[in-house]
Length: 495
Image 1 (cartoon, rainbow, N blue to C red):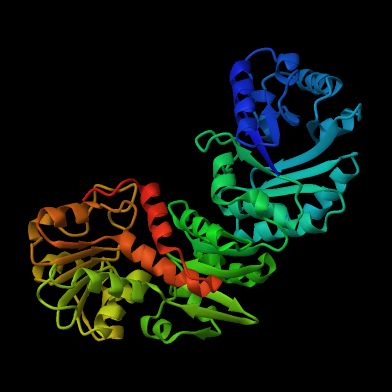
Image 2 (cartoon, one colour):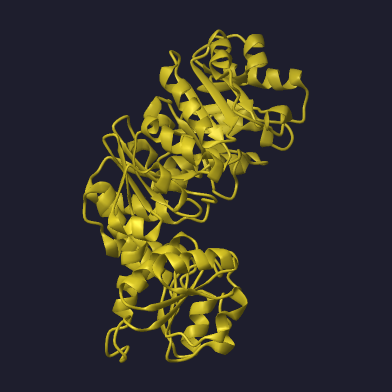
């Protein structure tokens, strides 16, 4: 179940949002009375409530907005209990002061906005002595492992326990806590009005992650990256999973580089079956693999991980998707000078995506030249594939047949940037931008204006995602649905 939190200054707005949520299927709502301006009218807010309701009045020290005295706050909570509210949220000291009355259920809660304490079980045991119906513990995640510790607590608790981590590192706990036994998770009314760090909206929780369908048997897939907020993968993959009938969810995991090893160790405890891998982990994951396909060895990077028994197997679908995208664009009559073979290809960037593209180009007979802001990395990549490297400042000094941007330059929100100056753009060049959000980057727009053949990042993203989907799930990917979902998310393409 999802509890949707409403925090509004005016009673009529709170009531309207409460009713709207019920019309959208919400079964539990939290009214954050500390957000109300002026005196709170409980009878107005609770008298004809359309679904079960939690009353919460959070102090500033606990992350809330309550400006009154503690005596006034506890009087208001007691009044809500007398009025028969379904649940009341009580911090530890308030739970000691306010006794059970009537049918109102008690949520005894603890919040830590700085960390996830080492003594979670001690805190939980203390709260469990205060006559709770539900224990709630919400803490700040400072590492991905904090989520695992929180889920262990939820799973082992004898009292029903809502346990979640805050911040973008804590997002997986909000999506998956039900799988480990949490009676509900919390979501906001709207993604632009979050009441806690890292909170998801009700729409995201229901329409992207289908939270109420997640159970103990749900297969977990996901994407690891840092940062993770820009990733469209959860939207595309979860939409693709629905038609298959699989009991599965695809989750975004923000994993800072220094926590990668621990996260991959924790993956089995999470129940993760497979992962997409993106910046900055495509090369670093190799040391954890027990098996890999030949392309991974040649490229020196993996973008797909799958667990099979005790084995962690690595794959790379980037290179195949990139070459398929280019070959499709370079077919006659659109392109009259043959395919990739013997063409001079300028690869911008030297990271995981660049390694995959450069490997594929070289394998198909292109003469590859690598240029990135770090010449040492460019030279290392060029040497690995048998190509050449040039300094970033000299990238306009050659006349390539193919230009491939494998840098994040031009990615949302920096949409006014381009890695290649339009003054050097020619009509007889093929321009491939691996950035997919936006699809029509400044590089793409300027290439089209010059009359060049263009391949967008959407094409590569969908192709690699479809290959990846098959590897992870064993099922054919609904590629057109994935493409449509992505295009709707990033806006209409402008040709």
